[in-house]
Amino acid sequence: MIGGSKKAIYLIFFIILLDLVGFGIIIPILPFYVRSFGVSDIAIGLLAASYSLTQFVSAPFLGSLSDSWGRRPILMISLLGSSIAWFFFGIAEEIASFNIVFGLVVLFSARMFAGAMGGNISAANAYIADVTTEEDRAKYLGLMGAAFAVGFIIGPALGGFLATDYIIGIVSSFLPSMIPITPYSLPSFVAALLSLSGMVLCAIYLPETNRDRGVKRNKNNLEHILEPLKNESIRGIVIVALLGAIAFSGVTVMFVPFVADIYGYSPAVAGLLLTYVGIISAITHGSIAPKSIEKYSPMDVAIFSSFGIILSMFLMPFCPAIGNSYFIRGVSPYLLGVIGLDEIILLLVVGIFAISIACHMVSLTTLISLAASEDQQGSAFGVFQSAGSLGRTFGPPIMALLYIIAIWSPFVVGSLIFIPVILALRKIRFGMGSNISS
Image (cartoon, rainbow, N blue to C red; front, side):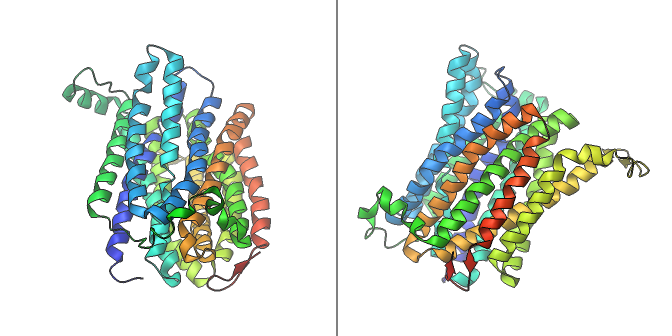
């Protein structure tokens, strides 16, 4: 750890957390929001993919720009952009009341702009790499990963809470009637406010860490942005990130429709379930994953966690059948008369999934950081994030189409995708420090 940097790390953690809570707020309402436009469920996957498509394009550029312009200005610009995007996302419903086609255009445009601004995570990870040593980098990159998890704890629960009739009624009574307050607009407006708050904190309190940015300003071109891919180790990890993101994103996007259709969950209940996932993920990011990497290695953790992902993804759609199976029928079907046995099994499987995904992501970000040179941290994380975004572009539409064909199919196909992920990881040789090769 570089002296005096711990305060800055916790500050950027909080700033990114605000932005990610805003992102998480949208998750439980998104499928219901899309369905309110009267379109096919394929649109759910397309809307999720639109975010990732623009993030795929923007992440390498924002990461590279942070190498030359500095981490702080890139974070400020992207946070402000996210705030604007979520505001227009919220008013798309009102616009659709006059013209549904134009409303959908605004909805998708806002989501895409939010995705472009979401590429700021590459700059945030590079910020962490600037102020940490190789020995403690996994720990603090795990902390940044925990920001995602905590965003999933607070965001979905808050989104579901804001979508309830009770809260809508209270907020509507305080605001003028010209401001559209609905179960979809209110969560979006709160997301916009959180991103704007993060931008203000960044502008006032966050110090710049990339002191050599002026020297590298002339390198902002596509060749420089993609230069990390010349490193065979980085290239192998990027391929792993791409494949994993296709499976993971498709499953997570269709998970809310799954629990709504099979278990009858409302946005509020679905938000609480995602909060449960976030709590487990936060604990794993902040403690379990870094300690596992320290005890074993990032590569060992990446491979082992992939097996956990395969198991949990495959079992997820069959939780109701397992809970009602002949072998378990003798067990008391309800816990305290509130939760069914099939729901208990779902919680166990989803818990394994959350732990496995968190360990997988922390191990991959650690591998990327160790493989990249000091002056390419932003570019390397940008390319890495872009690969994940590309996977999240293809994953949701594919899984949405599979979901329409058979509800169980996105989860089974997602688990099968992680088989080549394991094979690709095994081809990457990992040594101490930056000695990674393929």
